[in-house]
Length: 259
Image (cartoon, rainbow, N blue to C red; front, side, top):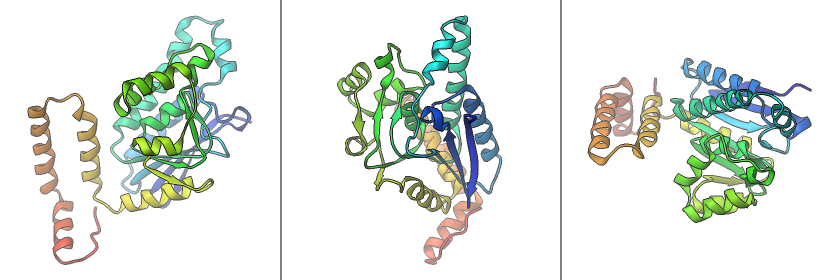
């Protein structure tokens, strides 16, 4: 059965499903390219307000395919470097995508699968989900931005433990630490994420884009520069048509219908 990234529409939400059941939804270079292509298509469509990333079946994603990695050891190092560049292009596409991306996680999310979850803006996870930075278990180091994302989300000592030991951490613990936004019962992650996506889709899309850009830039900007960027976004959104729609609806106690 072919490993692929499947794309479907649920109302105003694009659902991207990692599909590789024979290898516990392990990733492939074809998926990386498909992920970038799907996000490009979703960005250009005004009808799509959110994206949900999930794994089909009982596993979110086992990370890299070890059989493929072993085969790549017999090839020039550039082969694996190009593959990782593909993964990193997908991660960057998720981070810079101007609409919310929600990870809907059921079952294990390991290695690059965990890194993909961390690249998303919001995370819904079943209570029985487990996450692992499993790289050190097979004598490898992280990719997919996992070390970057975790270092910004958790204390250094905990990040070091997770990466050096490759041990499991549960969804409940990550929820307590603020990495997982919402917990749900097993089998309900997709429905929970879709409901949340629909709620987000009712908000002004230009404002959600501004918020995502501000969050992405906050770490790198000194405060005076970031205050300037905030001012520019605020003024732009005030004079956007949705600014008038939102304020008039609030003052008149109506439900806004944003462009």
